[in-house]
Length: 160
Image (cartoon, rainbow, N blue to C red; front, side, top):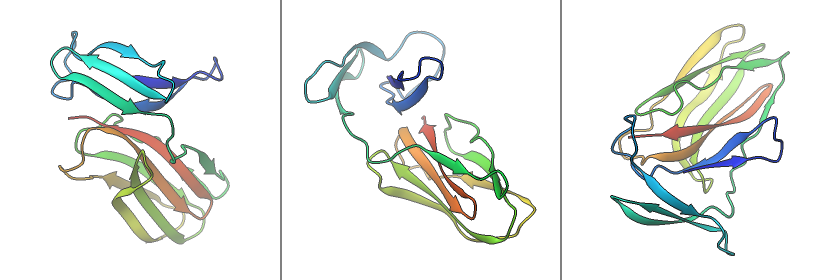
Protein backbone atom coordinates (compact mmCIF):
# COMPACT_ATOMS: atom_id res chain seq x y z
CA UNK A 1 0.00 0.00 0.00
CA UNK A 2 1.31 3.42 -0.91
CA UNK A 3 -0.08 6.73 0.32
CA UNK A 4 0.45 9.70 -1.95
CA UNK A 5 0.27 13.42 -1.23
CA UNK A 6 -1.86 14.79 -4.09
CA UNK A 7 -2.13 18.36 -2.81
CA UNK A 8 -0.11 19.42 -5.88
CA UNK A 9 -1.41 17.29 -8.80
CA UNK A 10 1.65 18.22 -10.89
CA UNK A 11 4.05 16.96 -8.21
CA UNK A 12 2.77 13.79 -6.51
CA UNK A 13 4.89 12.45 -3.66
CA UNK A 14 4.83 9.22 -1.68
CA UNK A 15 4.36 9.90 2.04
CA UNK A 16 3.88 6.37 3.36
CA UNK A 17 4.39 2.77 2.30
CA UNK A 18 3.46 -0.61 3.78
CA UNK A 19 4.30 -3.93 2.14
CA UNK A 20 1.67 -6.59 2.94
CA UNK A 21 3.59 -9.26 1.04
CA UNK A 22 7.31 -8.76 1.82
CA UNK A 23 8.19 -12.32 0.76
CA UNK A 24 8.52 -11.44 -2.90
CA UNK A 25 8.79 -8.54 -5.30
CA UNK A 26 8.20 -10.70 -8.37
CA UNK A 27 5.94 -9.43 -11.13
CA UNK A 28 2.42 -10.74 -10.76
CA UNK A 29 -0.38 -10.24 -8.33
CA UNK A 30 0.28 -10.84 -4.66
CA UNK A 31 -0.37 -8.53 -1.76
CA UNK A 32 -3.30 -6.26 -1.00
CA UNK A 33 -6.75 -7.20 -2.23
CA UNK A 34 -8.49 -4.21 -0.76
CA UNK A 35 -7.85 -0.97 1.09
CA UNK A 36 -10.45 0.89 3.14
CA UNK A 37 -9.29 4.36 4.18
CA UNK A 38 -12.52 5.99 5.33
CA UNK A 39 -12.30 5.17 9.03
CA UNK A 40 -12.93 8.33 11.06
CA UNK A 41 -9.91 7.72 13.31
CA UNK A 42 -7.50 7.83 10.37
CA UNK A 43 -6.89 4.09 10.54
CA UNK A 44 -6.49 2.30 7.21
CA UNK A 45 -7.64 -1.30 6.77
CA UNK A 46 -5.71 -3.42 4.27
CA UNK A 47 -6.68 -6.98 3.39
CA UNK A 48 -4.26 -9.52 2.01
CA UNK A 49 -5.27 -12.95 0.69
CA UNK A 50 -2.34 -14.79 2.32
CA UNK A 51 -1.55 -12.68 5.38
CA UNK A 52 -5.00 -11.52 6.57
CA UNK A 53 -6.10 -8.08 7.73
CA UNK A 54 -3.70 -5.24 8.55
CA UNK A 55 -4.90 -2.31 10.67
CA UNK A 56 -2.61 0.68 10.09
CA UNK A 57 -2.55 3.98 11.96
CA UNK A 58 -1.41 6.51 9.37
CA UNK A 59 -3.14 9.52 10.91
CA UNK A 60 0.01 11.24 12.12
CA UNK A 61 3.69 10.76 11.56
CA UNK A 62 6.02 13.03 13.54
CA UNK A 63 8.77 12.69 10.95
CA UNK A 64 8.60 15.34 8.26
CA UNK A 65 10.26 14.68 4.96
CA UNK A 66 11.80 17.99 3.98
CA UNK A 67 14.94 19.24 2.41
CA UNK A 68 17.04 22.36 2.84
CA UNK A 69 20.27 22.11 0.89
CA UNK A 70 22.14 25.35 0.20
CA UNK A 71 23.64 24.62 -3.23
CA UNK A 72 26.50 27.03 -2.49
CA UNK A 73 27.50 25.05 0.60
CA UNK A 74 26.54 21.42 0.00
CA UNK A 75 25.25 18.82 -2.46
CA UNK A 76 23.27 15.71 -1.61
CA UNK A 77 22.68 12.99 -4.18
CA UNK A 78 19.50 10.94 -4.45
CA UNK A 79 19.40 7.81 -2.30
CA UNK A 80 19.92 4.68 -4.41
CA UNK A 81 18.61 2.03 -4.60
CA UNK A 82 15.28 2.98 -3.16
CA UNK A 83 13.50 0.71 -2.28
CA UNK A 84 16.43 -1.29 -0.87
CA UNK A 85 16.98 -4.69 0.74
CA UNK A 86 20.27 -4.61 2.66
CA UNK A 87 21.99 -1.36 1.72
CA UNK A 88 21.22 2.02 0.18
CA UNK A 89 23.81 4.65 -0.72
CA UNK A 90 24.14 8.37 -1.36
CA UNK A 91 26.83 11.03 -1.54
CA UNK A 92 27.35 14.35 0.24
CA UNK A 93 29.78 17.13 -0.69
CA UNK A 94 30.47 20.12 1.56
CA UNK A 95 32.09 23.41 0.51
CA UNK A 96 33.67 23.78 3.94
CA UNK A 97 34.77 21.12 6.42
CA UNK A 98 32.35 20.35 9.20
CA UNK A 99 30.48 17.87 11.32
CA UNK A 100 28.03 15.65 9.46
CA UNK A 101 25.42 13.55 11.23
CA UNK A 102 23.41 10.93 9.35
CA UNK A 103 20.65 8.92 11.01
CA UNK A 104 17.81 6.60 9.99
CA UNK A 105 14.38 7.03 11.62
CA UNK A 106 11.17 5.03 11.66
CA UNK A 107 7.85 6.73 10.88
CA UNK A 108 7.33 7.52 14.59
CA UNK A 109 10.55 9.55 14.62
CA UNK A 110 12.66 7.07 16.60
CA UNK A 111 16.30 6.71 15.56
CA UNK A 112 16.75 3.12 14.36
CA UNK A 113 20.32 3.45 13.03
CA UNK A 114 23.23 5.86 13.34
CA UNK A 115 24.87 5.92 9.91
CA UNK A 116 27.62 8.50 10.46
CA UNK A 117 28.63 11.14 12.99
CA UNK A 118 31.92 12.86 12.36
CA UNK A 119 33.87 15.58 10.60
CA UNK A 120 34.24 15.47 6.81
CA UNK A 121 36.63 17.36 4.56
CA UNK A 122 35.47 20.00 2.12
CA UNK A 123 35.56 19.82 -1.67
CA UNK A 124 35.18 16.04 -1.84
CA UNK A 125 32.29 13.74 -2.59
CA UNK A 126 31.75 11.47 0.42
CA UNK A 127 29.82 8.24 -0.16
CA UNK A 128 27.75 6.79 2.65
CA UNK A 129 26.10 3.38 2.83
CA UNK A 130 23.09 2.88 5.06
CA UNK A 131 23.14 -0.75 6.18
CA UNK A 132 20.62 -0.93 9.02
CA UNK A 133 21.05 -4.66 9.73
CA UNK A 134 18.82 -7.69 9.44
CA UNK A 135 16.65 -6.84 12.48
CA UNK A 136 15.10 -3.81 10.77
CA UNK A 137 11.70 -4.81 9.35
CA UNK A 138 10.43 -3.87 5.91
CA UNK A 139 8.70 -0.50 5.76
CA UNK A 140 9.08 3.25 5.28
CA UNK A 141 11.97 5.04 6.96
CA UNK A 142 13.47 8.53 6.85
CA UNK A 143 17.16 9.14 6.25
CA UNK A 144 18.22 12.39 7.97
CA UNK A 145 21.36 14.34 6.99
CA UNK A 146 22.54 17.33 9.07
CA UNK A 147 25.66 19.39 8.43
CA UNK A 148 26.97 22.77 7.22
CA UNK A 149 24.59 23.88 4.47
CA UNK A 150 22.43 20.76 4.61
CA UNK A 151 19.43 19.77 6.68
CA UNK A 152 17.64 17.15 4.64
CA UNK A 153 15.41 14.14 4.99
CA UNK A 154 14.84 11.50 2.35
CA UNK A 155 12.17 8.79 2.48
CA UNK A 156 13.59 5.30 1.97
CA UNK A 157 11.75 2.01 1.78
CA UNK A 158 13.16 -1.25 3.13
CA UNK A 159 11.93 -4.40 1.41
CA UNK A 160 12.65 -8.06 2.15
